[in-house]
Image (cartoon, rainbow, N blue to C red):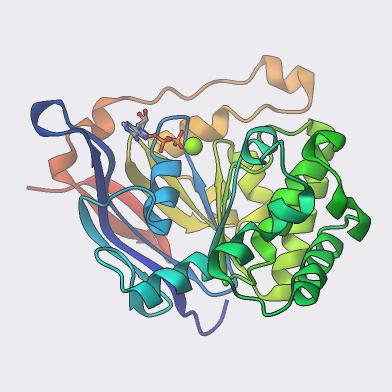
Length: 300
Ligand SMILES: Nc1ncnc2c1ncn2[C@@H]1O[C@H](COP(=O)(O)OP(=O)(O)O)[C@@H](O)[C@H]1O
Ligand SMILES: [Mg+2]
């Protein structure tokens, strides 16, 4: 990517839950940028802090330390009313479970319009209806689906409704938090392709969260690997797959199922030693190869 300009800058982000001795650091001094128009894949096992980062960006989780800059503006800490409105419009989230994230009792028309209602950013009922129609068409659904209820749709269609609900706001940035993990394997590629298509068409920037490296390989331009609240490696996608440097990344890579069953049988799992990153105070993030950053032990 030429002329890289960050849309999102995360600087030394720390998010703790609880107080005092019992506090738990879910996100630990995390820094990364997401450039305009790119997809940044954030990968790590369940509980590693991925959603907490996503929720921190949109202001759903309180930030303990660090800064978040979006589109040149500091959005962490106290936001003015005007800035809050901007963030609510410009940053949208797509969630993992389309069954749980849609209001069962509301019609698609209402579900997709919710952000518009909240911000009151339409002038006539006709304009709102038109926006719903366009959002549904954008995700490959028929406009007449607006009058139906979520239970009338398949998992893949419901995720499309979730995407329409984000798109209707005309966001700049979308946080997709494991958007295909709950879907049937057979329709995952369709939803990923839809996201890629929409990105091109609308110039969107994505933070794509996954627990599976094989998915981000398909969709991400760059990947950050997170382990226990700490980013251990960041690189361009192909570089990361060709030259994984951190033992944790290697362990994740060797966990990717190999399609050929014969090869799979002989696969050697690369063990990963917990001591490698246990002592966090002596770790530092350095550029070991061009644009390839790794958390390493610092020489004392
Ligand atoms: N609101 C919360 N209160 C306390 N602990 C939380 C809260 N949200 C998340 N956590 C904990 O923070 C860690 C990271 O969670 P999360 O960001 O959801 O992980 P991931 O999305 O990578 O699976 C987990 O141990 C989780 O239990
Ligand atoms: Mg999560």
